[in-house]
Amino acid sequence: ARSGAEILAQGNLVVTRGAQRATGARLVYSRTATNGQALLTGEPRWSAPDATGGADTLIFDRERNSFAGQGNGWIRAQRGAAQPGQPAPVLEAHADRYEYRGDAATLTGHVRAEDPQWKLACGEMLLRNAPGTNRLEQVLARQGVTIEQAAVAKGQVPWRLNARQARMDMAPAGAQMSCIVAEEQIVIEPARAALAGEQGLPWRLHCDRLTLALAGEAGRLDNVVAENHIRIEQTGAAGAGAEFPWKLDCDRLTLFMAANRTNQVDRVLAEQNVAL
Image (cartoon, rainbow, N blue to C red):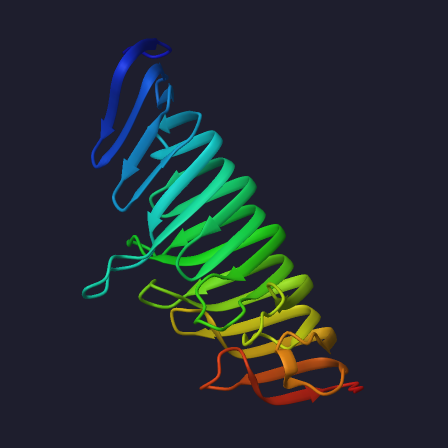
């Protein structure tokens, strides 16, 4: 088509470019001297190596080599290599709108994401892949962030983290999350009350900055470092494990977690302006 032209089409439409593919029932293709955009409606879908998605309205941008979804958007992306005898872990995300490119995706508006290890809700999320790969390297979340442990062993209560913004780093293989760095308005606590015989975090922690080191596919807490305006208090989530309530205030707190007990504290180091 010549510059400035439009192509209108309907039916079982397929638009391809290399390994990328988009489908829909109706298409408006606009072309300029430097770019071309295909606007698809009618249950549009797209696919690229190791990822797929859809929305009410889909724009396939030739110059940016991207897919932009508007309304009820969703993306499913493989976030690491498959392990022997196991399928590759898949991240599924939903949002009001998004843009997906091969190395990154930006989602905004009522964002919800889930994979086998964690669940996330926020107002805006950025997914970044390691350069030249399809391996998820980092997740940046902002605006009312909630992260919850998704995979827990039987008899365990998952933890939940609320913050204004958070960065989630993936392990080198991309198959699991290794670290969370959260900032502003932070609370980490049990995701729900413990039932009889269950164990979970026996405390609630407030602070301005929090670093969580994670271990294993279930997102077990390995090390917790809190900084600035810290308050940690007993919640009773561990059932009958505590005999009296307590509260600790300080400016820097490190929790060394027990290696053989999920999300249970082995040692505590409190520093600067400590009050128990």
